[in-house]
Length: 474
Image (cartoon, rainbow, N blue to C red; front, top):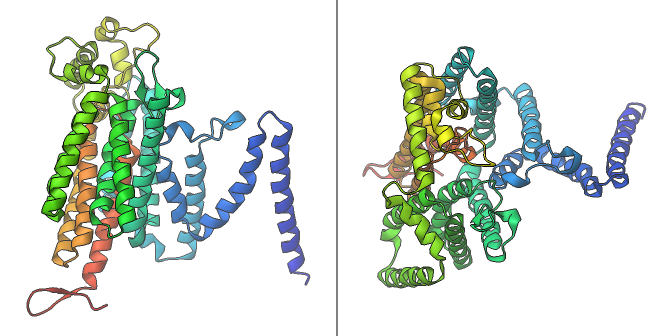
């Protein structure tokens, strides 16, 4: 009785604190903040028992970069930061209470991450722009934390079922916002006045294009592999929404890569399409193309035509100047570079920045190429480790697919193949967009380790009969 009294007092103190924290915002200009303490307690109770839900929430928020802050006086606090902090505390508690939990952190990707971090630190030490470089090193540490949380909290069900659903749903919802913004001219989901480009929940049309490129293979996988007609119909709707949002971005490189993605997905799924369905698909594709040619604004086609124009587009010419500045920087400091994240500082002081100066716009420009950002920032040394990280992740996925094929598990082999398509074309688009720590890329790197762990566990439970066929003892 006496021992339970402090526990009861602590409980009532916690309740009182939550009530007080919920009441105080009602006296300010931000009454909606009163919902946060109560919702926070409920969410803490949920992820305390199922921490993977916290990771799913972080992944779900990736396409909504413009809406991840708490707002009001707390606008500098990001929701995913708080989620990651709570997950780190939960993981730390698990490590202290369960000695077997540390096995979930094992991965062949750690050496590449840590070597890239070391190269970034070394490059920062010799950098002329140590402020920018140090900020990039912090982002590298954040990327490593996200990787650690991914491989620790994602299990077999998470990687095969839950996260693909989260990715397809969140990307499609972001695309839906973009379509709504384009149709109804809502500035919250688009940018520009005379020339409006869809952004959805992101801050940049090209970022939206990148997310659509990554999300499409997951949508198509559900459309081609589900046995439920309602799910197939929903996936088909999501496919059209994403393609419509892609058109609204007016992204030239995005349109090119999405076309390649769709052709690749059609090729790998063609064997599953019946002849009658194939005819209907071709008829539908022709109808969509005809409808697009009639409904799409002329400005869209004019913008795409600049991809094959001969030096007449100012934006493309400016991108050419990025390559020249990067070449000169690499020649000057080939081994360690100028410091991670310093390309913008170099371009700002170049003659090219003055030549392409735009009124009201900064001259601190990204290279529009992730790999050039790494080369200029950390030199050949850092780029070697960065490339090793990406190649190892791809090899993990390829090995996983081979293991599933040996086991006769065609469904999961196909699922891994679609993830490979998503990851591969994301990496292709990153040659046209600067984002060294793109979250879907980091997620794919982490999931490659989880996929491999899942396939190896399944292989350990599978035997082979006298005819060479895989047989599961379950």
